[in-house]
Image 1 (cartoon, rainbow, N blue to C red):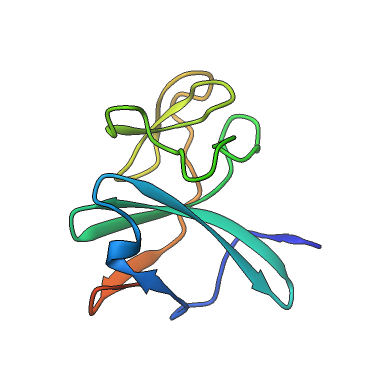
Image 2: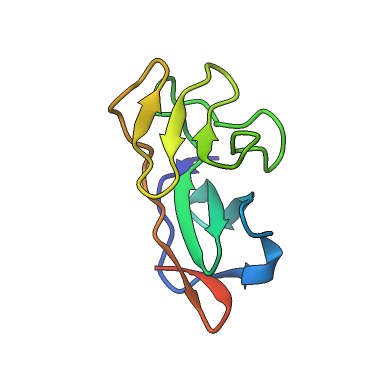
Length: 117
């Protein structure tokens, strides 16, 4: 099955409370054309979505379900090589791919629901 890099707009992923504040959650969407792997980080009422692929080696960022953040929750961290990414924009600020970026997965909160944009 093909691994997709984007999703259509207006797909409801679930209620905002599905993701605890300061945490992340993995989403796998089955579509006719293939399967999409992404994750969403919640910061208060704001969400940030990214493809689940490290900018360094194109591997999934986490080797443990929903474990995308550093222990203090300040950055996204690749569990394979330790690359650190800013949550707000996905830019790598430490590790083997400094300056590279995670691929954005546009998501928004509408009526307390997380929806693809």
